[in-house]
Picture 1: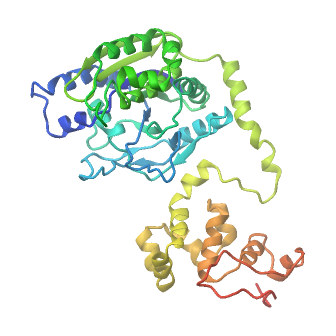
Picture 2 (picture 1 turned 45 degrees about the vertical axis):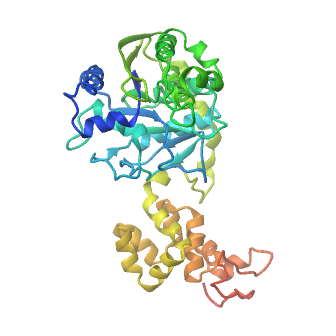
Picture 3 (picture 1 turned 60 degrees about the vertical axis):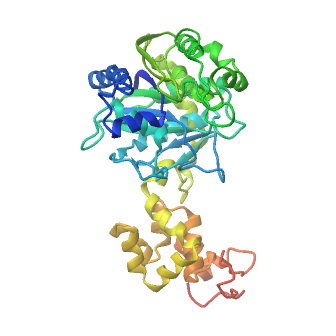
Length: 430
């Protein structure tokens, strides 16, 4: 069973990454930052967590306002450093833990937290600024990473209370995971700062100290505060500290604070802290009841022949191939595919098993591999194969046999103006 061994809180201001990359350890203006992270480094080295669940907000780097989610869970296999405009930092990618992430996703959805899920997106300074100072990373990071991106920039945003409840649900999610894992929760952001408008440069060190006191001893008081109250006390961007409440909710009601530090070098109050829960795990009966609730929505689906729910595990497994097929919605991509399939496979670095499935138009095999049907539909539109041909092939039937089960003999696809009209009369063979 997975265990939450503690929580780390750290600001994620880009000045931390700046000081690290330019080796400012001995600079009087920057050395307090490195000093504050030393206990965090030691705690991680001593406790050796297997996974860090890192709560952060993207700064409109990998997530834009064409689709902006309140809670987005990273379920991928690897996390690269995002390019925020000046080139990506020289840090290795972090390995993910897709199995734990999928379990957390299923658990939180069962508790009616409507998440979005992401893969193949870079993580910006919200993640890698503090992480680069927390632990060594050459040649690789010593822990796996599950990122939880919080949408706190475009209002309306989740309330402080909702974040705290999310943390409490996160505890049930992690502790109900069956594998023995040591998990540390990392919350980033804040403390007081505002970076826009005439109030830019606002700080409130007295509030920062009060916030840290309440965070340890009375998180309920923080959960009751409104976003306007957070903005008044800590600046509008400083209100992102509600993300810390996710970590606090995931810990026990009582915690021991092993380390706490605060430094205000420029625009943002930089804080680091370490907390360990007084009570370690939820009762086994609670966890078993929770696992049952997690499973109830798909109980019995395995009895439906030929039915393959597109789960997070399937999505991660076949992500590269689904992405390859999805790219066919772009004119230049499908033109290149039609001109030279093998070159397209090579450019996408598809493994041979996936190339073979596409070459043979093995529609049933593609589904079994983890491709979602709507990617098959797009491939069919590109190569001139109707949806009905694909349906019949997935059933292992000829088109004629499948058509006899339909009320009409229509053939259709999602092909647009580039494809000619499909004949209403089925061809002589599938």
